[in-house]
Image (cartoon, rainbow, N blue to C red; front, side, top):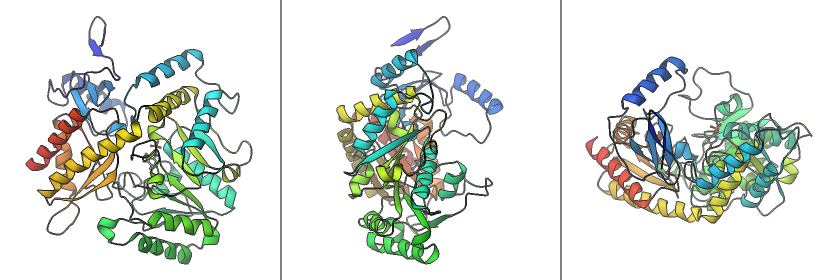
Length: 452
Ligand SMILES: *Cc1c(COP(=O)(O)O)cnc(C)c1O
């Protein structure tokens, strides 16, 4: 499908886009290079990018640039376009809504689609109890609001976050985020009453889940005191921190301790939510029922939307007018979310994430058998990572990781790195990617590693 005007033939994105990797220039090509030069002049340097191209279309498992290069997408714009970029149902719902009305502000005059999204979140998030939701614009904003709600509900101030945690880039969420560079360095002072404790990182700490939980709980009790603690916030599988999967028994022990002590347990499922891990929410994989769940990223097929969902009595703690924002739950984003949630539920995307996880894991484990520089392959569903180490010492190898990522990018495969030590490559393909394209992307990763 093409849209033709006098000067250019630009492919239209979405599921009909040709599903191939095709490089017609070096990256960046001349047209992208021109645009990126303007970017360097016009856009603040703090806003960096990992793939040196300018996008004109995307869909399925590919991203097409201004020079006509077609790249394999193993990042989904950081776990956002899980249903696929420009998903047909999302595009149609957005087009219909934008023609109807674009904004009223839900706090001024409400509309049904916001309530539809809230009902869907209440139904789909873990926990068989009465729930309510509120909608916002970004993951960071959802996290901020979850903390506000937990503080109001408990009348307490302290919040515990974990080593390797990532919760966003606003002031409170920078305080909650562990890693200094690039997220926090020079941007302080940070919000007070945020405390960090070690979590569970089996590959590096060697602790069982219950032992890791006991270590965290002892620190919380001795250094903060349960009576002062409003909330514990954790990603069930840590995202930016390195796709760290906690040992069995860790999360449930922390949840049990929170419940005994009247502390609100918040699962930050901004990255893990909506089928990404092969379950609708990652909390299900660990059998936990969080008091509050934050969502964003995959929720609306690429439109900015976020939610806080949880126990009705906690969610209702904030006074009328205490929660909101001009754009939170914007009608276009809600229309996109309803269409995306329909796709998650009715297009087999939970199962597809499991299949993708099987393909990623078996291929990466095969690579690992022949290459001790891959220290660990871990994750769930379509959220899988490889941690690169020095085989002699087990020390993180960020240079190798950067070299592999750079070679993948040059070969037209969008991969993302992560990890506190910068030594993890994470795979977050759209769930709309085909098996062939995924396999080809992994061939290129394998070649890049062999050459590095
Ligand atoms: C991305 C992310 C956030 C922040 O979301 P934004 O929409 O970028 O503000 C918060 N928590 C987790 C776990 C994330 O992955």
